[in-house]
Image (cartoon, rainbow, N blue to C red; front, side, top):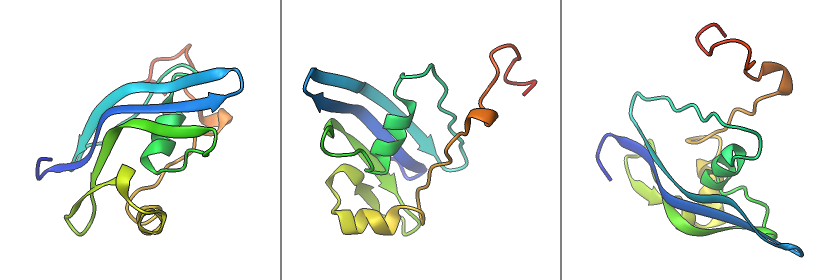
Length: 120
């Protein structure tokens, strides 16, 4: 992972195993965020935005959900690269809220499709 890279997600796959079969909520997502960058994840309902974010923080409810493939590499304040998929739950608890957090969008703060993003 490059020195300026904070987060690198490669080929992330998150599946939910239900009585009706396997739901592939996220199927091969890759992106990275470098120092000084901001990432906005925009998409239709059900496109995997929240599942991707929850997977990065390892908050997918298991069962029925599971990260089945991919890597999530993160460089924290200490400068050490960590693969979040392989960390223990105790190590993840130290990272959540301190190094990585998620801002949940309420229904009253969602984007209006009638206006351009710039106008909003």
